[in-house]
Amino acid sequence: MNIALDYQARVPIYEQIVGEIERLVALNILSPGEQIPAIRELALTLGVNPNTIKKAYDTLESRGVIISKSTKGTFITDDVSVVKKTLVDSIVSDINEKIERLENIGLDKKEISKRLKL
Image 1: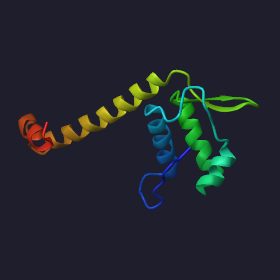
Image 2 (image 1 turned 90 degrees about the vertical axis):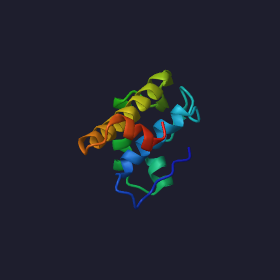
Image 3 (image 1 turned 90 degrees about the horizontal axis):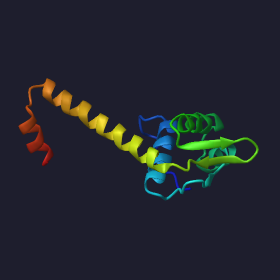
């Protein structure tokens, strides 16, 4: 699993890991039912604290991206369509918030659309 982290970014490392795994699932690079590295293994690979990986895995599990099976490991969910929908919904929500901020400083939808080249 190839996860790229930016250690200088303001985004917390665990959030970067969550985002990268969601992206890999959405792109079908990580397949439904595929086992992902154990917490300690991924922590060693990425050079981060195991607690950081644990927090990322907890977040991914709460979002339905991964499933932990005691004594067997951690796996990508079988229903990756939910992952993609959740990811798209999150991005659209972020865009809508930015558009609202633009409207709050006086730009109308026509000007916003023009500047975004929509």
